[in-house]
Image 1: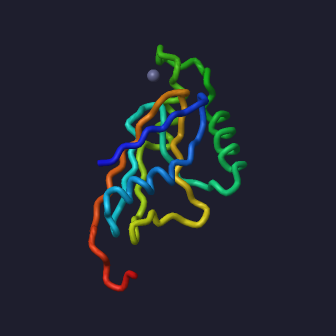
Image 2: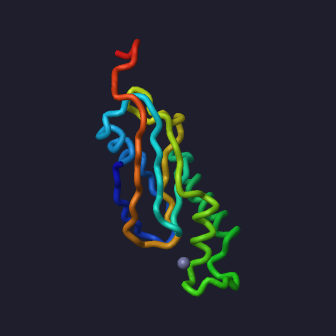
Length: 139
Ligand code: ZN
């Protein structure tokens, strides 16, 4: 298993971790398989979306804030219920196909770590399963 550290700087933010995940895939040596990206936190999440236009991330965070307000008469005494709810909405894991040692993402897709109760130092666990050999036909 590979682990990466993500330092967040705001209470709520989405950080593109695609390059760090790709580095982790390369370290495993797996050429063909599946990369699981797992966030071991209850107030953070993971998602895949567009990184080409930063307005997309801005709009996602703006709307999620309207959907799940910071204060709404929550029972959880720690005061971060909104972050827990957002974490469950986004989910704590994603899977990406690995082909020829590379993450097979769509043209506009990036993997985002989603912070909902920052700033904090966070971990992301990465496991790549598959074949290390050169596949027939691959150059
Ligand atoms: Zn809590």
